[in-house]
Image (cartoon, rainbow, N blue to C red):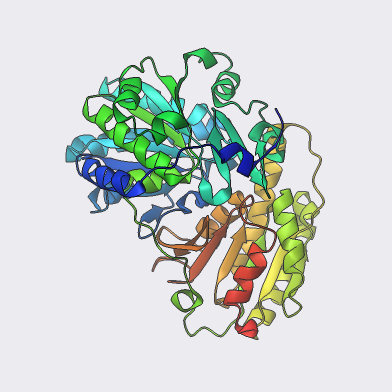
Length: 475
């Protein structure tokens, strides 16, 4: 299985009249009388939506608040990609129990979407299996199946002939051949999603038992056929949805709602595209500087923790901005507490001096990787590094004009532990796939734009372009 030219792979796929699809979808969405709860394993899952609440805890009160909203959908940021498997299981048991309790209290049914990485990393199948088992135990209802849809157009993730691809320039690379598949904690080898399922479930769910919704069916708008496929799923077997554009998601959701209204019950493991469509979120233009920056004349603050190849390339491009202050954090000190404290104090002092003078400042972890052995140890060290760099945001007293955090674990910790956000409003996206929170009144810096920049999204120049658009000194 090799990389292929995107134009070559997509050239014979049938076009479809999306206006017809949109009318049908709008009609079906009015019949979906359920609260949609999206559990997000890092903060990047809001990268397709706007004017939706994201909560950063999963207390009973938070879940009650989410159910009480007029919006049909709300997000809970679990950040579980930074958790051990044991803690991930406990968190998902707790969340499922509280969802069921609130559902029974309000007599409002629900759908749970486990939003995870479009390059297939994360605690799968642990998270969805735990949700299934907990909900079934408490309600005595059975889930018929699990839908997997990792398509995410904004990030260049496409599923074609059941193979999941990651776009690299003009080519589509099978996901199992990318650096993401080699992740120390969440590694995998299979690019064909039915085989990925069999691999990750250790053979419990077979590739041959997977129901695959084809691009041909979607592009032919064969709603009845797709609905029949969904109606035939049982025993928590898996459904793989092919998609290369949002219209494919829309056609699938039309059939899905018909199957749900006929009594079928599913859990979802998806990237960010499905949440936008099933949540009925409209398109919105990219956010402008005028919408984000108020009268704060301080510099911005950029935190770079991700080490993936794309982030390093984007960071190197950002270095071309000569007016920006760059401060390296020696992350190798996280295992030496006394030296670490001195290092953090140095950085905090420098950050406050520079941003108060209007100079945008970048704090970045050194590019050298730890070699720590096991996947659990690797994850623990990553968390320690993120906690250290997050403490810088927690301790500064000068409010930046904006904050950008690069990387999933980093952006979650900056939002929850650095900025102390309990509830944020998703304003939209500043670039495709790059969401912006407006911090809540309770946060350290209220109503400030917080830009969550995934490690694996954008071109080499995207980070530099965002900073140039927002920076006081560049205007």
